[in-house]
Image 1 (cartoon, helix red, strand yellow):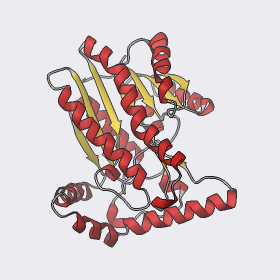
Image 2 (cartoon, rainbow, N blue to C red):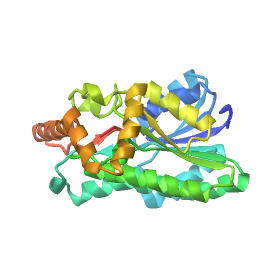
Image 3 (cartoon, one colour):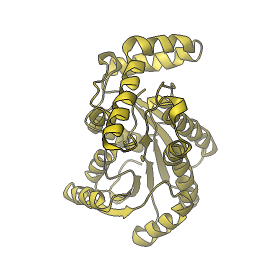
Image 4 (cartoon, one colour):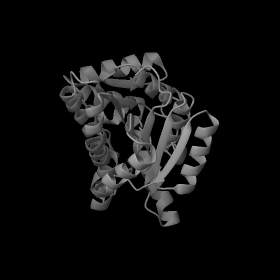
Length: 295
């Protein structure tokens, strides 16, 4: 897929976080972007930006936890713009907790939004792509799915599931002209937990701007890249890949590295910080990131 001009993109989690940057980047390619998110007002703002950047923006308010209603969403998209050429499963939820303090409701919400909704939306759209002999699916996962992380275990589990499911479907799609890829960013600046928790990221972990990640997603759409680990610091990216490969043989070593560079401490501080904020505001510390964060 060398050009996105005139292509129809269905983008979940479009109204905030990384989703906004993805929308802007694809808009510059003159794509038609159907943004899905719960907030109509925020979607309207993003669609206005899409139009300003040269694309065509259409917003459809929808709660991705309503998995059984996704068929209705797909029908609505088909009525408005016709077949979907590109699906970007970007919506995501994080809740930082000591594992035993998670509620069942929180666990279900995270897994449904991050994994089940992506699976079901793909299941509904894939037959049309196969019939037309063209299509691209991007699943925005996370490095947290490559290596489990303390105090964010459910998010890690959901993203690991997304990565392995992508891997399995890619093998099923071999020999077709429909491609599926997993994008695994590391820490992301300006959006999500970096902003909401007010806890600085360890220097050695590396960090990428959302614009850099959005451009990486664009490149993945233009090429056949089955899985992409994204870090703006190339040296950190290479070291991360090596670390994960070595971790398949010696996972305890990676545990030690994570503790050494401050990843575990960072997540513990985030969990404590959000818990304190929740107590002060009497709210559940749930962060709608619509992005992927390295753990």
